[in-house]
Amino acid sequence: MTKKSISFNDMYLSLMKKDSSYEGIFIVGVKTTGIFCRPTCTARKPKRENVEFFATTKEALQRGYRPCKVCRPMLPLGSQPEWMNKLIEEVNKDLSVRFNDFKIRNFGLDPNRVRRWFKKNHHMTFQSYLRSLRLGQSFGYLTNGGKVVDAAFKHGHDSLSGFTEAFKKLTGTNPSKMKTTNQNVIHVYKILTPLGPMMAGSVKEGICLLEFTDRRMLETSLKFLQKKWEAPIVTSIGPHIKQLEEELTEYFAKKRKHFGVPLVTPGTEFQNKVWNVLKDIPYGETRSYKAQAIAMGNEKAIRAVARANGENRIAIIIPCHRVIGIDGKLVGYGGGLDRKEFLLNLERN
Image 1 (spheres, rainbow, N blue to C red):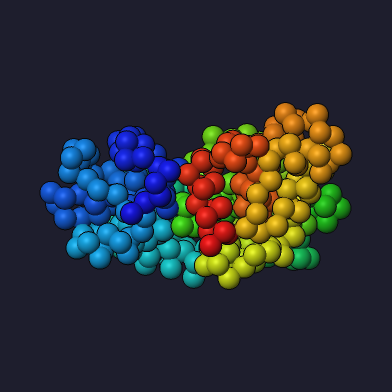
Image 2: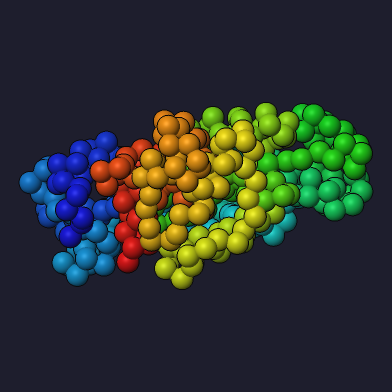
C-alpha cells in the first residue's frame, strides 16, 4: 500500500481535485468497476467507500484490477496517445508538409481533438507547435553556419519573406544578422517522468530549466529567462536536453546518483552560492535549512536561504528536495511535499 504518511483522506481529496502533484505517488482502485486509475483521471468520481489506494500499478494489478482506458495509468502522464502516433511520425519525417484540417482527417483524426490535446499538453495549438518546430530547426541551422535561404526552404517555410518575418517576430533579429548578433534562443521540451511531466529548458551553454509542468512558478521562470537573455522560446529538443532526458531516466531507475549535464543558473551571487551548497548535499542524505546556512558561513541567513531554495529553477539536479526542517519534517517544495518524499525515498532506498 501507499506510504503511511499520506492519509486515505488526503489521497481521496486529491483524487476529487484531480491534483497532478500526486502523480506517481499513488494509484486508485475502484472496487465497483474493477479498474485502477491515476490521480488525475477524468472519469466519473467514485464514492469514498468504493476506492482503495496503492503505491504502484504493480500492486493494483496483483489485486486483480485492470488499467483504466481513459487515463491509461500504465503510461507516463502526458505521453503521446496511440491515436496521435502516425500523425507525429509524418510531422517528424518532413516539416515542409502542410497539415491542414483536410490532411489531418485523412489520418482518421478529428482536427478539433488534435487541437484540444495540444492545448492541454503543450499549451499551444497543433499549428503553433508546427511553426515552433520549423523555427527552432531553422535557428539551429543558422547557428551552425547555414544560409538563410536554406534555413527557410529546408525547414518547411512557404517563402523567404514569410520566414524572415516570422523569425524577426520570434527573435527580434533579422536572420541574416544572426552571426553578427550572436542571438540566443531558449529551447523548451517536455520530459516524462514517473512523477509527471517536467518542462526542460536549454540554451547553448547548458540546461537552464527543469520544473514540473504543474508548478505555479513555471510561467514566472520562463518569463525571467526570456528577459535575462532577451531570447525567444521555441519548442524543440535543444542542446543538452537529450542528455538530460537520459540521465533522468537513469536517476529514476536508481542507476545514477550524479548528473553530468551542464547547467546554467542565472541569478544573484547569493542565490548561486545557495544552489552550489545544495549540490554538495550527498545523494541519499538531507540537510536542514539551518545546516545549509551554516555551510554558507551565515547561520542567521536561514530565511534568505529558504527563499533562494524556492527560486531554484532546476529541480532534482540542484537537489532542493534534500533540504528539510530542523525537526526532520518535510517542508517547502515547489513540486509538492509528496513528490519531495518520493524523491527522498528513492535515494534512501
